[in-house]
Length: 470
Image 1 (tube, rainbow, N blue to C red):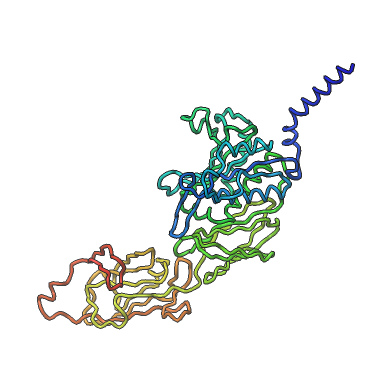
Image 2 (tube, helix red, strand yellow; image 1 turned 120 degrees about the vertical axis):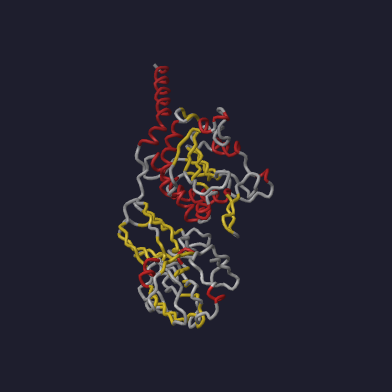
């Protein structure tokens, strides 16, 4: 009888042990209590031999090891806020001696020694060449695509991939087994996953050699977006009740140059939180832990139009509000050919006007007039900052002309022209000049061209060193 009871106890214990992971996953949870995670910041030590260095702009240096490390620290905080037990495979990114950096097997050994439930290695990707467009998300687990060593690793990877893709707005995502992804390696696979005794995966969140992404990966708030994506994936896998708070993020660009703006200011109301942008040429901003109520986002970058956006924030929402910033300084005219009050302008010349900013070309054409009336054609260069007017025929000799661009002309951002340069928008620009006197010899007449043709300028129109062939 006693022996039979012992057998029953052993069987019950075995059943409980087998189904314990299933219970941990299937039951809805309030947090990560009782769960242990090992987070591995890939690479380390600012060592070009083992690290990835990218310089997208002069003075801006990206190291993958530092980016991975910062993401891991941010994820560590987020997981611990939900009562998870977390250990990192490294707590520094400074290794005077490269041999001190933990090896791949040593990283896995940390996870094994601490009997964690899940292991995750954080990386970013690279093409190895000149990358002008590639920026997708890749998650790798151990095994073949359809035959994972740990099925839970593939399941977790299938949660992580779309989360990172959505938070970083990469182009697409892939979930692959490392044996399938690296067929030449056989079943060796990734060294950091090979020794694991529990499910684990490696994320290549985005491509750090795609320069727009390189610049964003320099931003700590952008790195936190990936940390949030990973935390939400763990929550999804372990059936943790989703958060109610939301995230609001976006990229701000200068409307004239179409380039991300540095040093931006964004205000979130009604909380009156202010985000100040960095100077890594990414234009990124982010507000986290935003309650699901109506909000106003005010873009307050100095010298740009303050333009609020209203947003109904959803429960556990991920909202992107990008903004083209419009310079609130009106465009002015910085140079002309001819200069104002010129009294000897050649009748065979064309008219040139340079604006301080890229212009709405249609509005300028509609605002342009020349007296006496002269037919001609328009050509724009320098992204809409440089206008040429080519008369259909040579101008009249010894004649005063007036060119007017009225106040309806505006920049691409919609700011009206400051024609007289007094700092107040909405007044016309007026240019007067007189053409040369009529030639008095046959030799002078021989210089009159039969047609106009504009060749490439170099280096800059209206600069004394510029040459324009025609």
